[in-house]
Amino acid sequence: MKAAVLVFPGINRERDMARTLRLVSGQAPSMVWHAERKLPAGTDLVVVPGGFSYGDYLRCGAIAARSPIMDAVRAFAAKGGLVLGVCNGFQILCESGLLPGVLMRNENLRFICRDVFLKVERSDTPFTRGYNAGQVIRVPVAHGEGNYIADGETIARLEGEGRVIFRYSSPDGMIDPDWNHNGAINAIAGIANDRGNVLGMMPHPENHVEADIGSTDGRGLFAGLAKQLGAAA
Amino acid sequence: MKARVTVTLKSGVLDPQGKAIEGALRSLGVDGVASVRQGKVFDIELEGGDPKKAEALLNQAADKLLANTVIENYRVEVIG
Image (tube, rainbow over the protein chains, first blue to last red):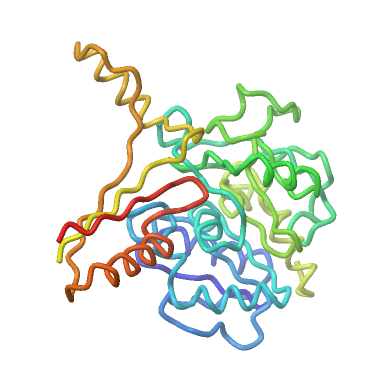
């Protein structure tokens, strides 16, 4: 696995992400500055990490999405390369047009920082092959703008094509408004593009990969990617 | 030349910030407010003096960056 983690001004979760990638795959990722125009040769996974690129000015992810490196990411994705966006990374992928829809202010207007439960809808994607379909995982969220929305036609297409990959759920996998902490439509926590090679999600699986932290539920995502990309997981 | 771009949420898009502002106005005793939708205003200083060109440039700025047209509408005005 030859991962590249993008770094934008104001991003603050890139080291968590790099650490997890190294821990799970055994290979340290390259850190790629936003002003670069090319990804390192041989890159097989691009990760857009969480944080607050450009201080969330204008709209979350809006300015980062127009960075020089994002043209290279678009070209990489167009060739089928795997792209993972977490939290602000999900917002950046939506703003850049790599994923549909937008992440609005949380319904209760609060910044939410706590563990949530996610139902893994599919296990037949490069990002979720480390899980079973229907499995529930516990991972943290930390965001003020995670309330996913898109027009009705887009939502119908996402649902119809099985592109909702993660949903906020109860600990036993029930989809219930009480467990949909940010008010996202259909409790959507993570979606894929039409080709299935770009995934965006609000929660932070990279923070639950070690038993010392209290949960290793995020590990499956990275172990699955490492397996997919041929590294020892 | 001075110009202004106003960005507002499309109708039908939920606006929790607008709702909170609406509630705050009510609790301040500002009567007669039926609803509030919030948005953004960009005051832009332009080089050159051709209003036609200015309008094209502002539309480009709004499409490329200032507005997310999935959820927002925008209006450009050349103030002169």
